[in-house]
Image (tube, rainbow, N blue to C red; front, side):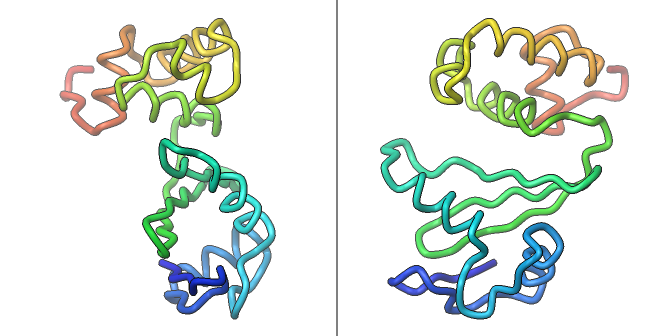
Amino acid sequence: MILLASDGRVEFASPPARRLIREYFDASPETELPITLGEWLESCEWLESGTPTLHVQRGDRYITVDRSGDALLFQEARDELGLTHRERDILECLAGGSTNSEIAQSLWIAPTTVRRHLENIYAKLGVHTRSAAVAWFLGVRDAGS
């Protein structure tokens, strides 16, 4: 976790957050955020629907960064199935109940591109439906799938 001061400078960074910033951004968050994080925060300020999640991948590991008020919350995971950033974005939107057109609009891509990404996601997850993909994403898979 990183806590930001009112002027956007780093007020506090937990040791795990410092490690993740070193590993994923090649930076040290002593008082300022890495450029990539700062630009992401600036680009999200105009959004009315909240701040989207930032994904950064290194090999088969990735982090997600979410903003909650003045806090940046980091989560690291390993992508064992090889989903791309865009496929993860689409899967998150799908889990949130978005239609293909809503996903396309929010990610600035064509609905046909969303459909193609979903086909790839289904193949990688070994599922055949939107519901099964969402269940997998939410960790509700049963042992037989």
